[in-house]
Amino acid sequence: MSDQASNQTRWGSDVVAETIRALGYRYIALVPGSSFRGLHDSLVNHLGNADPAMIVCLHEEHAVAIADGFSRVANEPMAVALHANVGLMHAVMTIFNAWCDRRPILIIGATGPIDAHARRPWIDWIHTAKDQGALVRAYVKWDDQPVSAEAAVESVLRANQILRTAPMGPAYVCLETEMQEARLDRPVRVPDVARFRPPAPPAAAPETVAETLAMLRAAKSPVLLFGRVSRDGEDWNRRVRLAETLGATVLTTLHNASCFPTEHAMHPLAPIGERPTPAESDLLRRADLIVSFDWHDLAGLLRARLGEAQTQMPAEARIIHCSLDSYLANGWSMDHQALPAADLPVLADPDRFTAQLLRALDEEAHWQKPAPLVPDTNHWARNAPLAADPNAVFDAEQAAFTLAAFAREHEVTFARLSFGWPRSASRFRTPLDFLGKDGGGAVGTGPGHSIGAAIALRESGRLTVGVIGDGDYLMGVNALWSASHVKVPLMIVVMNNRSYFNDEVHQERVALQRGRPVENKGIGQRLDDPAADIIGLARAQGFAGGEPAGSVAALLERLNEGARIVAVGGRYIIDARIAAGYGTN
Image (cartoon, rainbow, N blue to C red):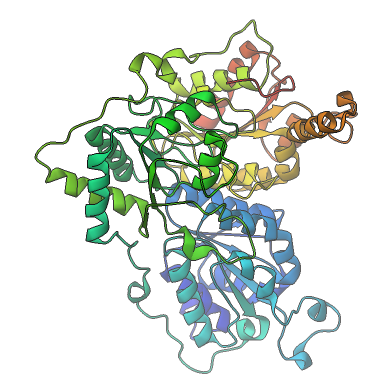
C-alpha cells in the first residue's frame, strides 16, 4: 500500500479497494466518474494505483471489451468501473457481449446517494436510479447494491465467487456514493479471501463416464465436437490424446478460440464457419456417434448441415452433449441457441469430462479404433494454399492467406479475425493462435478485445494481432488510445473494403427474393465519400503506420515493418485495402 494507507483513517471505499486487491485483480479498466470518486481515490491514494492498476479508457464500451479480451488469454478476470447509470448504459452492449462469450468480469458500478436529502441538485438526481442493476440483470450472473462497508465486502467476495464459477460470466456490484465516502468509525476487515474461492468445475458422474465409454466402444464412426473449452495447455494436450486414443474425427469452429491443432490427422476438415459445406454435411451424415464438448450451437449445426426441417430432429447418430450452459439460460436472451437433442446429456465441465474419459481409457486393455471418416489424402490442409496468390484480386481471402503465412514465421496470437476469413487459412497449432469471435455479434469490440489480449500477452513474447473489419474498427477506434497510454505492444490489421459489407450481402438476398435491383445493395452501406482515414485515426491515438496496402506484397511489407515496431514495444496499424467479397474458402 502507499504511504497514505498507513494513516489510521479509513473510508468505506478503502475497504472495497482492499477487497479487490485481496482477490488478486491486477487491472481495473475505467472511464472516471463522480459516482465512484470515493473508490477512485482509494485505488490511487490508498492502494497506490497498483493491484489493481488503472487502465484509462475513452468509452465505457472499450473498458468492458478490454476486460473481455484480457480474460480470453489470462484465465482470470479483470475489474471494470462504470460511472452511474449513464456509464452503465454506455457499456451495456459489451456487457451483453461478455455474457454471450461466457467471460468473467467484475463490474463495479456506482449510484448517487440513496438518501434523497444527501443529493446535490440536478447531477446527483439524474445519476441516481432505484434499481440500476435492472439495466443489465438479464445478462450478468449476479448483481447487488450494498449500502454499508461490511455489505460491500461481502458483495465483492460473492460477485468474484459467482463470476469465476463455471459457466463463467460478468457480475455487477453497484456502490452507493455515501457508503463510499463515509469515514469509518469502526473496524471493517477484509477476510481471508481463500475461504471464499470459487468451487472447482463439476465433473461427470461415474455412471455417465461409463455410459459414454460404452457408446464410444460401440461406435463405428465417432465424431468429437470441441467448442467452448479452456486455453490451458494441459487441457489442449488432453483433447489431442483423447482423439488419438479413440481414433475419432474432430471438428472445431471459428466461432470459438483455437482448441485443437487444426492440421492434425484427426481434424480432417477446416474449422467450421458460417455457411455449411458439402464435406461437413457428408461427414456428419456418416457419423454414428457425436460427442459435443460444449459446442455453442449443437442443434443449429446439425440442422444446417443435415438439412432437416425441424431443429429437434436433426441426426440419426446418437448424441452425447457435455455442457454447463443450461445454468445460464434465463429466457430474456436467446443466446442459449436451439435446444439440442441428446441421448446422453452430461452436466459437467467439458475439460474435466475429457480428463475423466482419458483416465477411464487408460484402464482399457485394448481400444479398437474405427476407420477414418475422411482419408488422409483428402485432409483439408493438404489441399489448402500455404500462401496468397499474388496474381489474384486482393480481397479478404488473399489478405488472410498472407496473414496466415506471416503467422507461421512468427509467434502470432490472432486476437480477432474479421468477417470473410477463409477456413482454409486457419492453421492453428497452439491454444493461443486464435482467441475466438465476438460472441454477442456486437460491432466496435475488435479494438478493445485486441488490447485486452495484448495486455495479457505483454510478457509472453507473442505478437498480438487483431484482424478486424473497417466497420468494427471505426466504431471502436478510440480504444487504441488506451493501448498507447499503457504502452502495450500491439498490431491491428484493418480489412478495409469501405463498406458494412456483411449487410450488403443481406441486402442482396432481400433484393433477389423480391425481384428488386441488386445493384442498389450498397446504398446506405458504403463507407466512402469520404473514405475514412484508417491510418490517420490510429496515428492520432499513438500508433505508427505506413501507407495503405493494396496488394499481397504491400501487406507483407507492412506486416514485417509492424513486427519490428511491436517487437520493441510499439503499436502499429495496417490499412489493408481489399476488394469487396468474402471468397469461397
